[in-house]
Length: 434
Image (cartoon, rainbow, N blue to C red; front, side, top):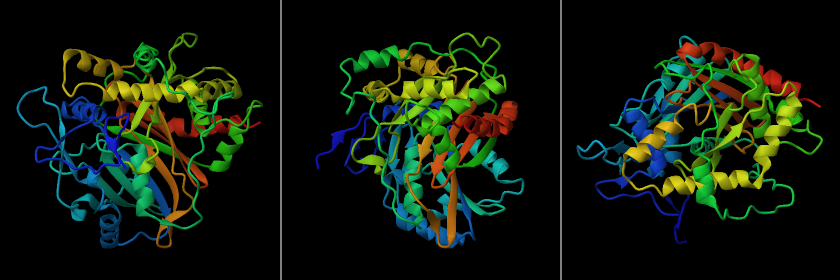
């Protein structure tokens, strides 16, 4: 098959190889690498997987990683900026075979899994090796695997792909996600004015909120696991039809932010806006590792009625234009010249600011049934994303099998939000019941 260009600037269907000098990073990778390399923010993010049962011996886990991940050249890439010019474009340099002794480690958690995850989330991954590690941690019910990676290397779908490849199926396969078209449309047509829409999407849509401002170097995390049945019941709350799980998550987050007073002192003004990652992979699907997403900003409604909030969010995200906006943005980003300049740097700072978006809200599904390692069963998956330079709050919902995990990441100065929001989001989902 002839490789075809991907919206994020990588060739799909082609091996990830490079000459001795390495490969220039795609713009999305380079943006996140430069944010961390300049000292602006730590771009480490974590995928946490909980298991019931006895943990595998560390040597067996390392051997499994080599067998099942060793062929991924993406996991052997080391970042760097050759030369001495301050605006040199960063590159990926392919390295030798994986060093399982470095990449797969046992991690003690004397203060609990949440505290240990917060510590690991705040630690940058250095440039000397491929920027990822898999941590084996003890828990009260069994153990957890925590995949820690630089966001320049992997996105959320990539991490789920690796997790599924690492584990064994313990039940029937689950078909891939089905896309429900907007009413009256069967296939979203390509955008005629994609670049114009992408540029228009750069206009300010948010306003400063109480959790905005300088982000301190420490992290706080909190999570809540809830039965998938609760999410499914909330999806049936609208008389117009079944809502998406993503809409349930966003509407519940909007209600929880309102409950803690995090929407600011002027609630009647517009501008509480979630930055929502949208996967833009093509037919090759999730097997393609890297960063293959764009973000669409979704206004978060502040209605008193949970179902009104759900209807507003579901209506916005159901539009055929929603996916087209993401693809238009991905094409705009991938078309950037491979160099830094005053305009591109200013756009990067603006995209990191609270005027562009209020917080990150990401929802990801494994699309897998039961998975495990030996007799141990995977019972939950959660995502802990990095924070933006001026946005001290990120919220995720990861779906697997019979459970959903809502996770919240803040800096240490806003740790009360990490403690309160997960349970409040669950309460808001419960309140949507028909």
